[in-house]
Image 1 (spheres, rainbow, N blue to C red):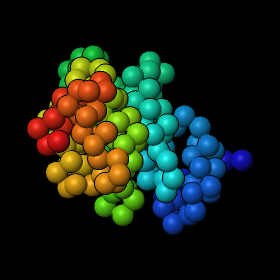
Image 2 (cartoon, one colour; image 1 turned 90 degrees about the vertical axis):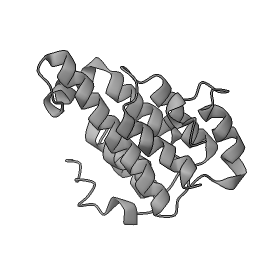
Image 3 (cartoon, helix red, strand yellow; image 1 turned 90 degrees about the horizontal axis):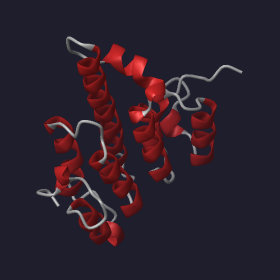
Length: 164
């Protein structure tokens, strides 16, 4: 069948097993990974890793170039990747604002992905990442591990170090 657009499927209102089935129906869709996968009610660390892989993969370069700004193809690719990361981090923030905090492994997946992000993390995305610490939006049982990751103990991104 044809995958139903996740917005039309009322993705966030569905139970977690249905959300996973909807995401699976969309396969490796860049839009599904960036905009919806982190809104899942269940564990999202694997989705975050898949999204970072999709942003770095040459398979999505054409779509990222089309989404990006700039003069040359490489500049548009870098811009498209940064915009994709922004969408992913906005979804993570929306998840937390809806009352579903990130566990340490989920935040660690975001931090590690940002640490290895091609071309580094720009200021807007660093601010979104830091929001999770500033808002104290971590599951309290996992905060210590996430802070260790952010300050470099587990390969974390420097982008959130000050906020942590």
